[in-house]
Image (cartoon, rainbow, N blue to C red; front, side, top):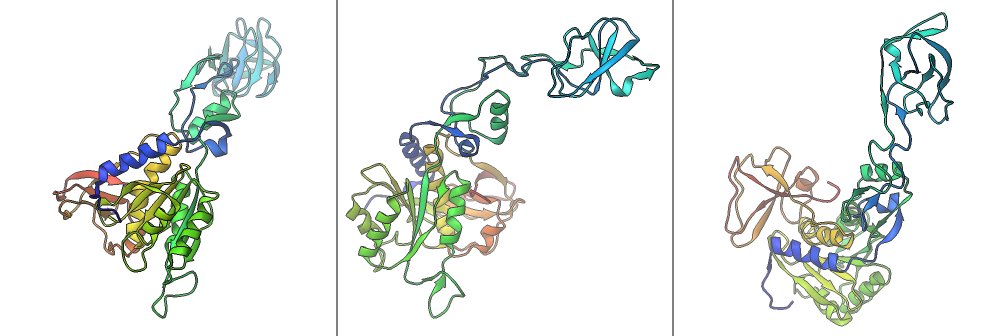
Length: 387
């Protein structure tokens, strides 16, 4: 590990995001399912008027002239109606094209039908062509997050794809001879929780996560080989464990072996400070997550989620807010990320090696350096992808 001082937590988030944003790939036209979770790389423009023609807002009767009106057929959604003549009426369904010549629509519930005639109060109960948007109008600016409603609007406006940044391919590499992938912990060895968990967090944060690699043998040669295997088809590799300088912590030496350079090396946060972010010569990223499960999650929250947002052209993920229901201690010069539930209570089982508290958490209350949280205080809340 280099002798650099830990980076302040807020600065680390911004640095990771900026590194991703600077390295975001060229935008391509992506199908909706692949574009969701990215950002628009160009303005979203209406291909046609929206709606493209006048459409009825109600079920009723389209009429022309003075009433009562003679009933002459019906028009359903998806049909092109014939023009209405004077004193004519056609039954019309919600969403159907309004016939040319229509002067009003009588709501079905307000109509009276007798002897082939319909009567009732008529009004312009339809949506005009271009009421929501006109052809060529910019609906959203570049940089807008592509949410399901944005996809729905894009489809309605005539699009089949969206210009956006593809999901970064990611792999998780699990280090540690002591880890098991099945059964219960035994004989000094423990079940790996990060290999099964972290890929789902990466997916929730906007990545295309492949299967985890490992557990990898605690040798430098095995670490280097696993990194090279993962980097062969990934834009981001998240490793678990090995971020310290213990006798079997080989990550730093492996990074040097493959020629990666640090973007961030340790963060002033508790738990989880020995996290890191590095970049290879060909522009791929390696995020080193501590081996303790909760510390690894904090690294995902602090570095990986901001990095992935940048790679997809999104802004730095915003922090939420939480009103503390009890006092929360600080951690000296480090930012303290404290697990809290939705009522603002600090959760039990919040040790860095534990996951039980995390499973029921709203997120991590952010207690700044040289500060403490007081009951009733509103603080920032760091959110966990997928939780």
